[in-house]
Length: 158
Length: 155
Image (cartoon, rainbow over all chains, first blue to last red; front, side, top):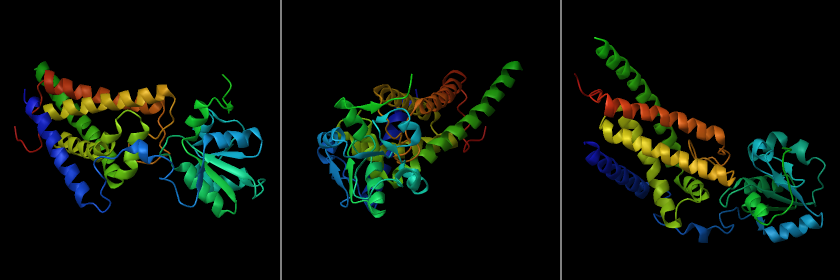
């Protein structure tokens, strides 16, 4: 059973390479990091403020906000915040004018994607700010947070 | 005579499979080593590991992929390498299936740390094909006992 000594040896070699390279690389990653404590919007750009799901829901109920979904169109089609526009970050430059041409610059805009560290909404918010929109914010972990609060969504027909 | 032909065919197919699977792991590992911080974010989004293990996992996994990929191509330590490859594929498929079932549309982190690389059923299907291929390698190594195909060993 050669595998019995080969597997731990391979793992040991891997650990040596991984830790060694991590030490010499320019942006060394700390080996242990309490991720959940760090995820509170501080991974996001300093130029874009984030919005809580409660505040986003209040703006939604007052019909005072436009949601823009930064996820890929195929994911958007599987379900999105009710009335949200689709502007995937990766196609933002080519699709932005057809999506946002009728939006007044002073309109409240909330961008969102999914996952606590998903930064597509942040990047899209920066992009929209650069286009001249004044009230753009990002909803961290938007799709999951919206669903957890049982807020209105658009789903595809069964 | 028939047995010898069969072994030869298995030998040739296993070399091709080894090269393909090895190359896939190497191609998958390099971008994640280059951007370990983003890859750690992808690992966090899977919500499968305790917080304290996320960084060490994100630092180590890409290297494991590259080393296993390299060993598969060169044919070094095939029994251990093939077992690890199969275990990794089973772990990947489990993680993808759990998060697809949860309905999380998170980034796969399979070939890069790109957040647009979202997981779906086709991702799981692709990994199942890779697992089938690596199980074939296990069959060749452990049942057919064709292990002396190390490119550094002359028969």
